[in-house]
Every structure is written in structure tokens, then in C-alpha cells.
Length: 110
Image (cartoon, rainbow, N blue to C red; front, side, top):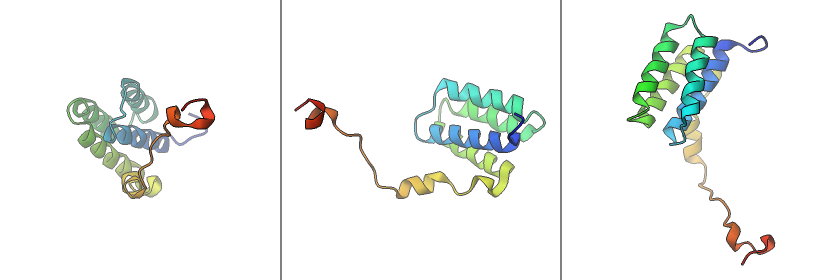
């Protein structure tokens, strides 16, 4: 990680994983990536390691709460560089649905 600030990189990854947990999109690969990043990028930050450990335990039973807690820790570690809670912005956006490809005339269906 020569070209990036490891703390910012960890904060962005933690925020991404937290949002995935909060939206029901969390995968095992995300958990592994988060744990690896904490060990490699911020090994001298016990609060980051503790947050990841807590997240990994809690995400199994309550991913939304685990994601929110991880996001708060990431924001506390990095500060204002992570900006506003994306959940607030996403909640204000209109819900869009994927196109129904089977009904589209220009796709050879219907």
C-alpha cells in the first residue's frame, strides 16, 4: 500500500462492508477482506481490530446493527474524510427496479 493512506483505505473498505451488511448484501468474501485489511493496513490500531472482531461476531445474527456499529467506528477513526452517512442519501433516492427483460420488445421477447 505505497500510494494510499492505509487508514483511509481501511475506513473506505469498512464503510463498504458496513453498507453491504446493512443492506443484506454481505458475503463471506467481504468479511475475509475486512479482517485481512485490518491486519495488514492498520495493525497498530487496536480499536480497528476490536471493531472488526465485534462486527464479525455480530454480523451473523444482526448484520444491520453490526454494519451500523462498524460504520461509526470507521467514521471515528478516519474523521470527516468519509463524509455523510450514505444511508441517508440512499433513503432519499427514488427506488428503481431492474428492467423486465422478458417484456422488452427490442430484446426479441414479448
